[in-house]
Image (cartoon, rainbow, N blue to C red; front, side, top):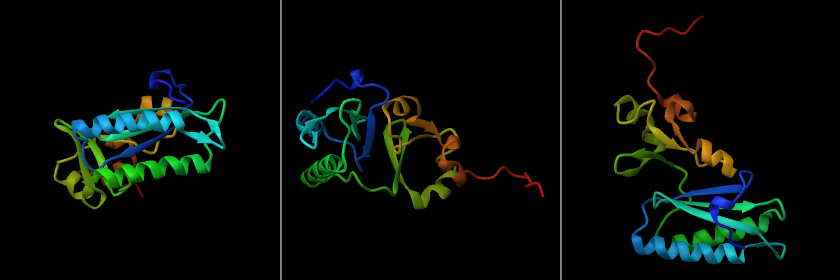
Length: 170
């Protein structure tokens, strides 16, 4: 059953899907309608799940399940993935490319291939304060507190250029 996202508890289990491009206005409306239907019908072992969603920056789908009464099972999670894959095929959007890292940019979201991150940091296109999206979070509370984070505070810090003249202690 669909629950407004703001009414979901901080402990709600979360999945974040990043699209490879922004949704058009008609696509977003279609996705929202389809997500309401998914949430209304999403079940685990024939037990309705309390579910919700958000669309962020017209490029992220955030699904949530309140597992206090009934938890998402492997089969129910698989059904949501199948739904997203169907949406992906219908709209020509890739939700499963884990080789693209999203950053907040003036014009919205900038996706950068993982293989180019070192060069982007070295050339100053990205820096320690560049805001990245942590799509690996698993609860609503974590999403609210740490979804958008400076690159220096994430695994991306390994791509930051080393300060000139700094020696590693021996």
